Amino acid sequence: MHRIFVSVNLGEGVKDRLSKFVETELKPMISLSDWRMELREDWHVTILFIGEIDDHEIYLATQAIAETRHLLEPFSLWLEDLEFMKSYEDGAGMLWVKTDFEANKILGDYKEALQNRLLDLGVRFKPEHRKFNGHITMLRAKRPSGATTFELPRFDSMEIEVSEIHLMESQKKLPHQPKYESLQSFSLNGEDDVA
Image (tube, rainbow, N blue to C red; front, side, top):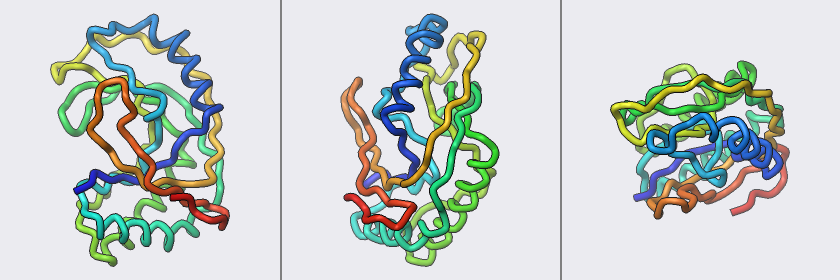
């Protein structure tokens, strides 16, 4: 079984800008005994979490994305603000960078279409129907009981040009190793896909 999701991945230029923000603005404000930094290699915007599926269902998920990606044209996504949130999985705190309203609408509409196609093809997963709120997780609390919060630094918005989406696998790895791997990228402008 494979833990699978669909995402917008970040280019190196955006990662460089976010890394600079983390080093100069975020790290000096946090307690490393309370918070764990997400690796820059793992930064992404999740469009849809599919969950645990088998090899055949990965093939079907690939087919579903290939058949629905025409619903997305290349677009600009803006990273706009920081926000503390509680994890749905364990209740621990997270700090993320939120995406803009228009990008959330575009990706939310696509998520609904992709979910419908996955269900039509027989992929077994639990569809999500809550409002889409795109984000990039930057910090996670080390304990479910929570972590010391801090005054959020000012965040200058950043633009991401989205021209492809990815089928991703979450893997168990050692700390300080990237845990997400792109299984295949899908171009939004009709170019060939890269496995």
